[in-house]
Length: 355
Image (cartoon, rainbow, N blue to C red; front, top):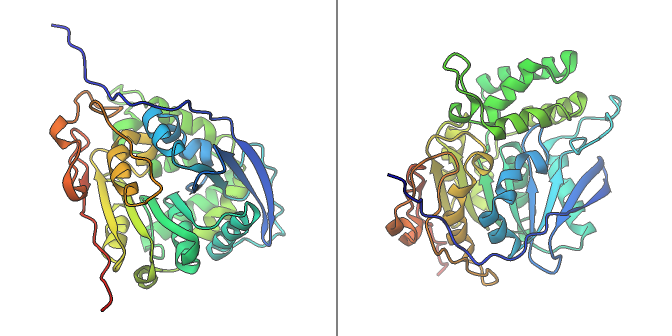
């Protein structure tokens, strides 16, 4: 018997995705920033992971009608791209010093000052999440909130160091090879969307699109970013000084799952929540962007300028056949369980009042 699936019905504004790219000179090289939306709205800055730019790291989230509407009706988006990761970027001279992650976070301050922005909402994935967290620790007055996707906060483990060293050698001597792309794909995505040749399961469109975008990266520029990330320091102790509200998203298949748990446990007295998405890799924003809808809506309601986003139906996972039960749409205290996503959210920890 045929049946129709429930859907999500929202009054959405017209979405304009024609951004304007700006090249901004900083003390450690130029950085590309692409601006989307009305610059009179509160600013949201994004920072992608290794070997990605905003179109390959945040495409699914910002092209998903409902999440794009939620974000664009509340924010002007400033996509910051790591040096040399923008489309058509020239190879950075090998004689130029490799910037540290501290240098990269300081570039963000230059970007904010260039656009005359005050405090901003930040969204970052993996390496980008580390850089934005570092920025929030150093310049707390410039950050209103952190939206972190599979974040890292400790120095590389021995396993990650070896993994990064292997990728570094591949990049330096062989460029963007098929093996390197395979390693990066499994850094980003779960096995559910990567496919299986032996079982004749094709990889998903989003993985194919990402694989194609990796061909557009310059290997030396990616190598430089990897060097910076591999030399990062442990910022666990500094997390307690974070003053902004934070929400963490991570897939249960992410290689950074333990890192995300560790970070959530050390966030101190800030208001924070933790969202774990079932059968998903590191890039929840690409693999299951619908899983971010309700938690983001609840998280942003804590800000006076946020325009509430009303759901009139039932959102679905883009890779799953079943739907979320209606009674789970508006959980109290950020307690969310999505089916089949099985999202787990820790309740907000209120800030302790000083006597």
